[in-house]
Image (cartoon, rainbow, N blue to C red):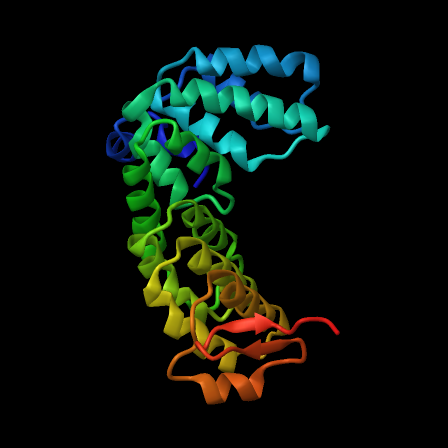
Length: 253
C-alpha cells in the first residue's frame, strides 16, 4: 500500500484508521516531489517548506518517509534531513504516534531515533527503544538493519534496563547483530551480561566476536570466575588470566 492509499477519500476506513483525511491535490503533488530523489536541488527547498507548512498527518508521514531516501550529494542530503528533523521535533509529542509507527516499519531508523530524542526524556527514549527491540526476535530476517540500529542506540543508556534488553541478541543468528550486542552489553556495564558474554566467547565461531568479547573483558576488568579453566584453554596468544580471574593482555617482551 502506498503512502497516499491511506488517505484516499474513496477509502474512508483507511483514512479514519489513521485519523487523517485525503491530502489536497497540491499537497499530493508536493509529496511526490519531496520523495523524488532526482528532483533538481533548486526545487527541493521550496517543496520541503511547502510540505512542512502543512500540519496534516499525510504531510508528516511523507516527511518521515523522506528519511528513507538518499540523495546525492550526501552533504545536501544530510542538510535537508537535519532541517526536517529539527522542524518535526519542534512539533513535540503530537507527532510521537507517527514516529513510533515509522520506527516499527522503516528499515533504517537512526534519524527517527534522533527526532524522538529531541522530544522524549532520556528515560522515555530508553524505554521506547527497549519496547521496540522487545518486539523483535533473534531468528533470521532478510534485513536486520533496524534491529542492529536499535541495539546500537541502547549503548547510550548504561544500566541494567538496556543490558537486559540486549542480552538475548548475543544469540542472534545474524553475526553483525551479535557483534553489536557485544559492544552494547559492555557499554551498558550491566553485570547480568557477564555470564552470557563468557558463553558467547566459548561457543561462537566468529573471530571478530571472540576478539570483541576478549577486549571487552580486558577493558571492564570483569573476572571470568567459574569459567577460568575453559576460558584459559580458549585464550589466543597475547592474553593471560591473572590471579583475580581477570583477562589481561600479555606484556610484550
